[in-house]
Amino acid sequence: MHILIVEDEKKLAALLRRVLVEERHSVDVAHDGDSGFDLAASDTYDLVILDVMLPGMDGVEIVKQVRDVNVSTPVLMLTARGAIEDRVLGLRSGADDYLVKPFAMVELLARVEALLRRRSHGLEVSEQLAVGDLTMDLTRHEVRRGTHEIELTAKEFALLEYLMRNAGRVLSRSQITDHVWRYDLDALSNVVDTYIHYLRDKVDRGFGQPLIKTVRGIGYKVGD
Ligand code: CA
Image (cartoon, rainbow, N blue to C red):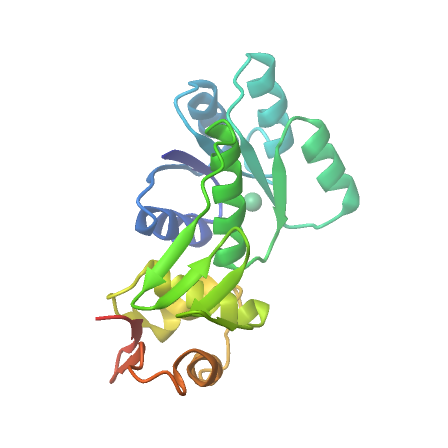
């Protein structure tokens, strides 16, 4: 899918871009409101991720004007303020969803996928991930090892989903932190190790072949 990011915080824009490219989207970035509007109004995108506070035109104004020229691309607003007024204004102006900064990348990806799914005419495809006999049903939020259902907390689920989406690839602790925890959070260095430990207890212990692997000095992966 073709996604436009309009975000003036360059570090965040770069991180968003990287995360979406990893999900095999093609991504353009604008760092100010005016060029963001020009690109969004070109109606060539499947989704626009739009910061509210921007130099030049602000995000709310961009959505209004884009809708005025009959562009129906889904818009996900990012707001730093978190004020109710902002959200209401954003949605009323024609945005489809919003996220309050700071957010976790998994949360962003979930919203992006939901909006893209809606875009593809609500074709109900049940989304499943599988590694060996470990399966994750994203629609039902269920995880199974073989026929055995595994109960996970929200964070454990998000961590396992990220690992399974990247099955066979080694993910560093900082990649995992960026995706599963908030991007601005200097997560304690052992938070990833702690959650991997929780996951192993639930997903691997007592099931023979362990699926979660430690790659020494780098990070973790699931599968071969
Ligand atoms: Ca901004």
